[in-house]
Image 1 (tube, rainbow, N blue to C red):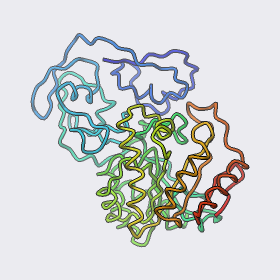
Image 2 (tube, rainbow, N blue to C red):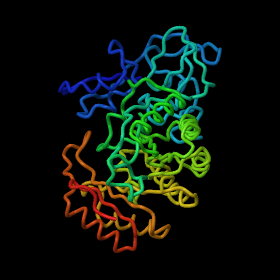
Image 3 (cartoon, rainbow, N blue to C red):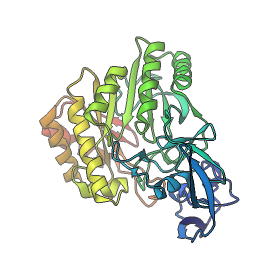
Image 4 (tube, rainbow, N blue to C red):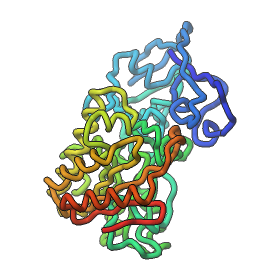
Length: 388
């Protein structure tokens, strides 16, 4: 069993501000360890000798004390999956934001990955997971990867919200205070859709985007959210920005059927080794599934009547220009007119030693991708966008 131990702490207070933890006793969930930007927390093994009695689906069991519900279920034989459909319980984020692993505990829906067991706890695993932590409602003047380039330049392009939790562990995560945030109060799809609709009206736009974190992790929630948005905004554009690592063809079908009109897909590397370096996934088989699924999602997306944008991360310490060209060449084979956005990854989270790419680097990438034959290339720079 595990517990978190602080060392080299600089009192940045991240673990207090975005992590929900009692601070009294540790259940070994690891959320603070994953979220600490300074890597000042480590997980240590600890023998749990005492046991408690819990009830799972009305059956009594004895499990070690001071562990998470997720760990207790695993001990009891439940298979924990990191890829959809490969386990009894899908636990993609492990930080409590996405609620994909949620169970009913004494009548309340809670994420099993960060909730500790206690004597007499009653757990029901057969539940609908229709709540999710989401925040950051705002008018967006730039838009995301899946925002059509011709809209840029207006005061506001769309409104956006950000879903907490992510299945990747990018050490240079560009939005890590959302990715690892589990203190946000979760809400139902309809509650979120109502807030998004009010925000859209406030800013006078018809585009509504959801990003993250990774917004696709809790499929039940996202599909219902898009349906609710569509009902409230029949003529609205509904934009999903995603790493696409779990968007199978069936999932894409459901997103489009629910009402998604625009999608932005990040392709974080052409080669698996680069992908693993960028996303921080060390399990090669899991990384391979994520990598292949994201590329297949891009190819599948081109078969629908939706707007598709592709995001490519660039920083010379993460990916070479030659590999950016390889990505561009593969995109060209599928569709040379698809919108391609190259994002200049800045120093962030655990990679503050990075240097943000220069304007000249991004201009060179733009020229390289245009020379391949890609018609719509946009490169993000410190001075604004180059292209298309």
